[in-house]
Figure (cartoon, rainbow, N blue to C red):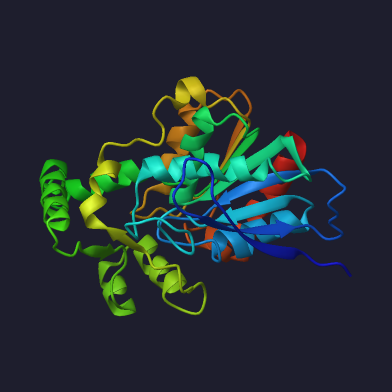
Length: 312
């Protein structure tokens, strides 16, 4: 029985001074003489291509006959770029264009049948990239999070957004003057600390990222604080009511946590200009069950594969 092949690649476009690392998942019986629909798959914030974007979603899409490419964001994972652990929405969105630029050079890719899928923060970036990247013909967000909204809400309960921006500015000044810039971890240090916080997203994030379930060397869940200000003024859904016109599938679970994917899913569904759009709310499913669990990711993929098959 033929099996999926994974090709590990790096590439650099004309506008870059670093390489992007990606895994290309090729369907069974793949041949370079054929032409395939393809899906760009984006990992969550603090994650990497080896986790849910690659081993769950890209793998399943390849099994269904698509060429799927899961990539590490610039400045993160196995991709290049300095400073490390940069979480800059502008760069994260530009990475989608860089990946498509590489993808369309491959002779077996049908350039008129390219889709995009992102998970968690990668879902928010996917939606934003699709506003202006019209080589994407169909768009899927899996428990997508608007990172700018999340950062502002987090800051609001920890002293305020303006105070946070002032602090980031001071850290950046100290950094360029030679002080090592601090890196924050999105997660508590222990399972007990996560349980004390009690929020379902935090508890399950620890279980995914810090145990054998989903742990990966590059899934470090960290962010450089001296460069954290850019996200505060960013909105993944800005102009979606004018520019997001591709067929759209938004999948969320109804178990709500602090990351706000449930709310963001409803927001982008209502706001998107797409005439062909669907919001799927999975009952009894949490944010992290949509990463890798049968009742979450499994259910989602049973909607995703027919969607891409029809729209591409």
